[in-house]
Each structure stands twice: as structure tokens, then as C-alpha cells.
Amino acid sequence: MSILGNKQSVSLLFCNAHMRITELRRRLTEHFGADWAPSYAKDFVMAELGGQSIDQALAMGMEPADIWRAVVKNNPDISSELK
Image (cartoon, rainbow, N blue to C red; front, side, top):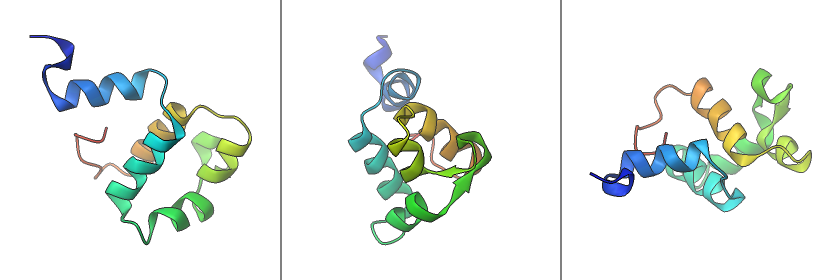
């Protein structure tokens, strides 16, 4: 079976490689919902991001995949399809 044979493998592939900001935002919206995702990205700070929010980390040039790993670490209830 190819690594592209299931969604979880594809998701893991993207998480461990380069991720676009649009993909990061899509995952945030899918997990947190359209109403709460922007607030989470703006207001929730994480130690893994140097005490920065998602929006601040992006503005500082952090890689979206690294940011997503921090989100997953802080939200263990994220579905396996999004991890």
C-alpha cells in the first residue's frame, strides 16, 4: 500500500513536511469551528511557540507545520485525521 493509501498517512505526511498557512488555517477551522478558530489563533499562547499565539508565530516566520504540532500537543482531542 502506498503512503498515500489513506487519509491518516497523508495527514501525517503534511504534518511532518512543509505545510501551507492555508492548510494550518483549514485544520484549525475544522477542529475549532469557523467562529472560534480565529480567536484561538489570535489569543491562545503556547509555550511551544515561545509564549506566542499562532498569529504571532506566523508573523515571526515560524513554520506552519511546527505551529500545528504545538496545537496538537495542546489539544489531544484533535481527530487522528487532522493530526
